[in-house]
Amino acid sequence: MEYKNLLIETVDGITTLTVNRPQVLNALNSEVVQELECALYELDLDSAVKAVVVTGAGEKAFVAGADIKEMAGMSSFDAHDFSRRGQRLMLLMERMRKPVIAAVNGYALGGGLELALACDFIYASEKAKFGFPEVGLGVIPGFGGTQNLARLIGPNKANELVFSGRIIGAAQACEWGIVNELCAPEELLSRALDTAREIAAKGPLGVAYAKDAIANGLNMTKEDGFRYEASLFGVLFATGDQREGMGAFLEKRSTNFTGK
Ligand code: DAK
Image 1 (cartoon, rainbow, N blue to C red):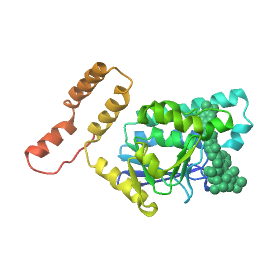
Image 2: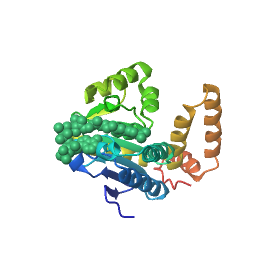
Image 3: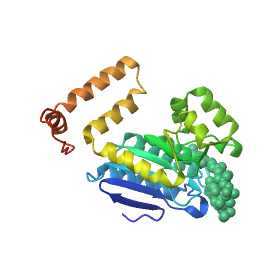
Image 4: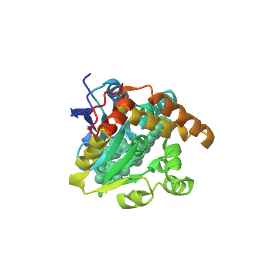
């Protein structure tokens, strides 16, 4: 499918998906949200794709939020529809079998930070900036941001960031646990791609089930989470990937996983 606002490039099983509206700092309008949903759905179904890196076009922004120009004129019905689409996109990213890494190259504000938080983890340029300016616009984060941020860094830090609308730098975001790795701007994408390749070399079913266990387990009691983990662990013993992974270890050779 052709996308007007996304650049998609797959090399050796790793897809780089770039939000491409640099003239408005890659702000998310309803068309971009729809394109992201379609693209990620396609990538999840594509067996040649092992991992996805999401980034923003240009030097200034990852995504500077939802498109304020479009939102300002929305009817209540449009806003509801926009919100449902955005939430569907964030849930899709969480439920995808493929790992998704955010490479935050500049501003990640509002819906942009929500997009990054919906990825499995975040690498950031030392120049990146993070924040939820929504309360200054008279609204709240509406694409899962309050939920994902509080789960990630705890309610106290999430409260401070969301209530103040403050924009913080990449070093503080890293210290607070929002960012896994800080990178020199020119190395950000290659660091994210290196990690994506490292993951892609592992058993795809193992990675997919680990993602499932961590994401879904967080919404369960610890005991239910343990039970869920055990059931996924058991299912993997019916797969070729488990036989291949353990067989390769015992035969002292490298693995050749098929994801089956
Ligand atoms: N939307 C639309 N255009 C944007 C934009 C945005 N979020 N951010 C930047 N732009 C545009 C600017 O208008 C400007 O366009 P022109 O004036 O050149 O036509 C161009 O991008 C360059 O931006 P600036 O000239 O402002 O660049 P600066 O370096 O001076 O400032 C900045 C960079 C990132 C500090 C500034 O652009 C800024 O404050 N941008 C807005 C950031 C923001 O408030 N983002 C959060 C948006 S609220 C919902 C679900 C989700 C949400 C809402 C509802 N539902 C449940 C319905 C999410 C809300 C948000 O994300």
